[in-house]
Length: 295
Image 1 (cartoon, rainbow, N blue to C red):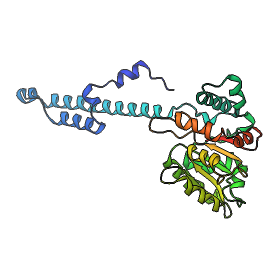
Image 2 (cartoon, helix red, strand yellow):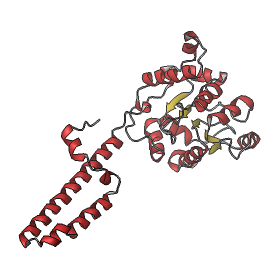
Image 3 (tube, rainbow, N blue to C red):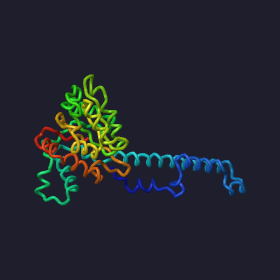
Image 4 (spheres, rainbow, N blue to C red):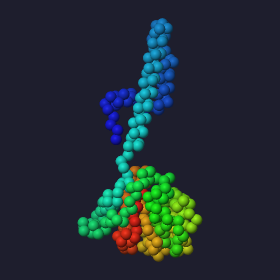
C-alpha cells in the first residue's frame, strides 16, 4: 500500500468549502475570483501593474489547485488498486486451511477431530495459480480454458444422462446465477456437443419445476444457489453426481456489504451442510473424484 508522506498530506489539505464541492465547481470559483475585482480594487483604482500582479497570483493559485486535484486522483486510484491478494489466488494448501476455517464457523459444536474428518483434502482442491488474470465473469471462460483444461474438455463433450452435470457452480444470489449461466453458455466452452446449462435457484422456480427440467434435460453444467442445489441433491433424484468432476465456489464475487459466498452465515452453512455435507458428495471429494475450485 502506498504511504503518503507528511508533505503530501499538507498539500492535499483543502479548506472545508473546497472539500464540499466538485472539482469543476472548484475551477469555477477560481475563475469567479479571478474575473471579479475586489471592493478595495474598485475604490483605490489600482494601477495596471498591480492588476497584472493580482492576475498572476490568481493564475498561480489556479495551477496549484489543479495540482491538488491530480494528487487526489492519484491517491484514489492507488487506494482502489491496492487490494490484498484474493484468497482464491492462493495455492491448494492455503485454500484447504481457508475452507477448514470456514467449516469451523459452520460446525461450531464439532470437536477438532470431527472437523479434521470433514476437512477437504489438499489433493481435492484444484490448483489454479497458473491463472494470473482477474477472477471476474468477463474472464470465467478463459479461466476455465487455461486453469482447468480437463473441465474444459468435459464441458465440450456430450452429456450421457439427464440431470448429470460435470460442473456445479455455486453462488449466493439469484441474479448472479443468471449472469454465470450466460457466461457458461459460451461456445468456446460447450462447443457443438456440450450439454445445456441449468439455472437453479428458488426465486421464481419451485423445486418440482427444477426436478422436471433436470429429468428431461442433459446438462453439462449447473449453476445455482447452495440452498436449492442442496435440496435437489438430498431430497430428489433429479440432480445426480454420476458425471460430476468439479464444484466451483464463487468466492471472488462480493455483495453490497463486501461479503463473499462464505462470509455470509446463511450461504456458508448451506455450502458446508447442504452441499458438501451430503454423504455422496463428501465421499467423492475425499476420494479425489470431485475437485473443488475457488473462483
